[in-house]
Length: 246
Ligand code: MLT
Image 1 (tube, helix red, strand yellow):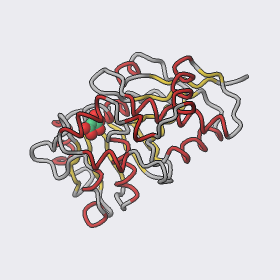
Image 2: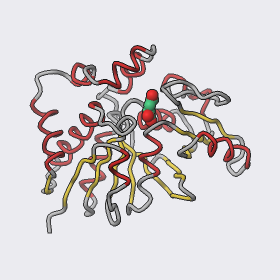
Image 3: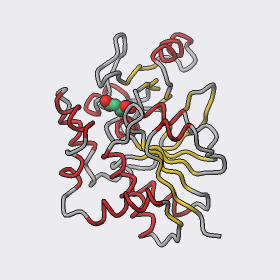
């Protein structure tokens, strides 16, 4: 039987979907899932994604993961008392090597936490989209690609990454049934005369980050020449998730 591939517009939409038996893929291009890839590439041991700032502090104080770094954002800015904001530039090897990072962001970590019922969850951005496409092509589960969005609203850059992912999976020869939204995102990416950066720069969240002085972050996150490995969720526990590299 042919399996399906769907694209879900926001983290909030994902919460009402039945993901049992699905391969879930979470995308938050600007910036959570891109930052996770950069952190793991630069030597972080793992990311523990949590929904709230309070949970992050209490996990650190519990000592469960030893000496951790707290990272993430609210309203795009560093959270008071945290070690790191949500800029990929700050997750350098000297800072994150061997460390567990407890992370909470407005949308990306919420989307991850929403996949607790999925059979498997992968973490995707433009930085590792090829590796994620390969893993999807090698699996036999129905696929739900979750665009994190921003506070319940769809964001263009997540949709573009979902479209790129669907396109890559199909190019690997997989014969999937696409939902209408998956077709729309794929066609947007495949048929545009603009490059990725030009397309994404028309998005609300992109413009907002730029206004706040994070334009450089968008340049890294929209770099489609990087080929970082798949990130996967190793375990869901008490509403939190561990994210690890390959
Ligand atoms: C999020 O999870 O909402 C984002 O990563 C937001 C941001 O980086 O500003």
